Image (cartoon, rainbow, N blue to C red):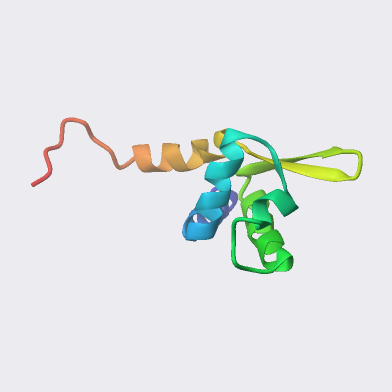
Length: 97
């Protein structure tokens, strides 16, 4: 059970930052290199790499190497555990006021 809680924590941490959500959204449209990702943000390449690492640890992106380039792609299946967790609290018959 501890691993499950850590996984949910890492997903929530990854999604809690606007930049990381933006990176996730952009890489869901097409695979991008770190440089292609970084060009959109007013921060250093190292800072963008740290955001990518958080997403990778959370299981929300995949990396694919092609020659000397590493392509980053969103991995939507990484959200399944969070969806399952949220579903435990959802009751379609309950009415919210």
